[in-house]
Image (cartoon, rainbow, N blue to C red; front, side, top):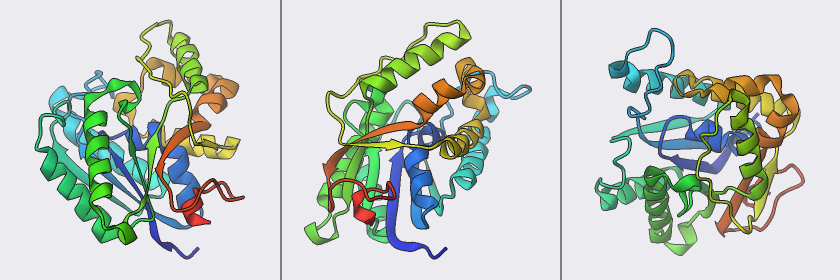
Length: 252
């Protein structure tokens, strides 16, 4: 299938954000032949969970880089920029430099749409919030005619309910402090095949699989309800709504 120029750019903070947060919208675009790139700000080296078996904490940085490479292939990404800002320390890094680097990627790739974190960071994660702010600033700094549409990853009430129920599968109550949006503009609803493809990408991040993400594989209906539901907020759009094929309006 011929790739479409001026595709989608996803700007995230950690390896696994692209799969767990935006895997559905990425798949929806890459499967339609739309060129999709990822910027990831950190190696995620602070996310030690004792996995995979036999791994050492000092190796996590390279483990997560390898996992991201596998997930990118599963999602059909055309390119990945993996930067080296400190995991947990993006907010303390040079914000102007990060904004400039995002701007340079937008200028080089000329995407029609950018997807990033919103000011809530989904659950208040400071790395998410910082990368979202830098992404917003980079988009705003583009000249009007070159400026891509901008979408924020969002959490709505059905997604909060999903996470609460899913996390109970592992017998825990370590619920994330999710911050549901009162109003979301776009919801990507994935079919069963797309959910399985998203699951394969998520499963590439073996070092980050909480017990509930393993247990949920035996609960197809619950997985469909959560992994198959991706809300977004439209910050600025070139074309409103979705096409009949389910793509963002920019690609109609």
